[in-house]
Length: 480
Image 1 (cartoon, rainbow, N blue to C red):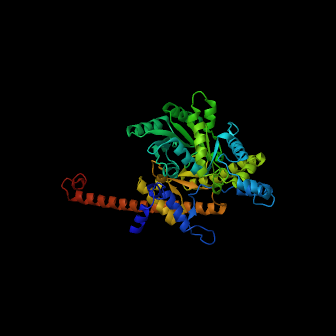
Image 2: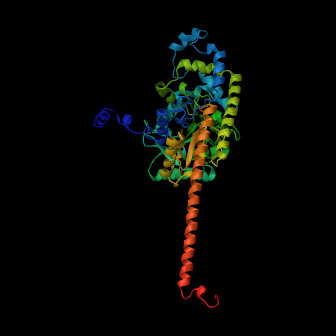
Image 3: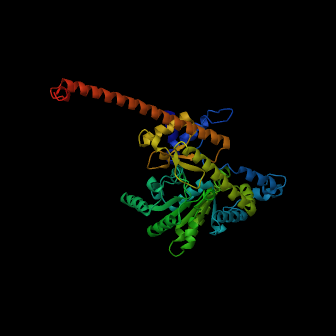
């Protein structure tokens, strides 16, 4: 212990503080899985990983394309002729064909309703790097971004850990399906003002992680009006844009900007994007920062030297995304598979009385276990979560780790596993719920029997008491 303390004293306060957030139940669930991972034959009683929002449902389409396009990679016999040019070249701006292909893909994903300028695209090592870069560009230590709850736990790491920026919650509630309202934004903003905290921006995640919902046009317009009036920034994390699998469709903040060029100051609007979720490429670390502000683009590009995407990856991605026939097929097929998996899982849970927030996007859903809590508190939620982790052997993430204001909600990821694992996971949840119901019924029967026994005992006592009383109707001559 003393040794660790001395070691920490040799490091910076930033490096050794707990801002990374690894002490959260969100990450604890991952650790539980890592120490006892499920395997259908080697470890059938292990923990199933349902805390990882990863899209593995359409890898076969990617692999098929790679096989058919060997020249896209410099590590194949067919593509090795480009090896030297790609290996020696690196620029903060990125390969022109890469930026053009990504811009076109972003347009395609958004239904060709918006256009993106390739010169405004800044590369980053995943959305994590893009978020931190924006935080560095837009705010100083101690200043804050407002974030609607519940929100992605790693935002605390991505935006706060090394920047010193604060995240202040905008409390959203289940009574209106956690929809963001102007009143909630104003309340959070006023609270920050009262605490002498300078608000520099509003951070939105659309589609939402963990809710799996999309923001409607009215809500996006209200958010844009809010930041324009307050003269603060609007950062929209749209990394799940292509995971929308049913209506209503996805509306990008870019649409709102383009439709209202005179009402909204575009220089306050910035988009974070990635290929990690839509294409299932988290290991490629392809993050994108897109800003309508020239100064932010220039500043972010300088900072991108700390987290560039390798040119080898850029080369492959540029070739793949330039294949419009493949892109259209992938987006359509991925959406269909996500829809099928979501419906299978949520319908299976509904059969045992487990509900979830009605959603149509993302790689997860927001499961409602409030009725299973012994007490409607965060402690009650954590007690239930520990049972699910340790006994049911499922890593689902508790709502409190997403800063949810209401205990009993859990995020369940469904796209990072095969069909058989899904069936096992669903069977485990259903069995747990049915056992809980059975235990509740037994307890209810015991309580009923006790109540009946007590009621008979009370009746006997009353009768005996009345017999002994001179005022008892049974001692009256009329009764006799």
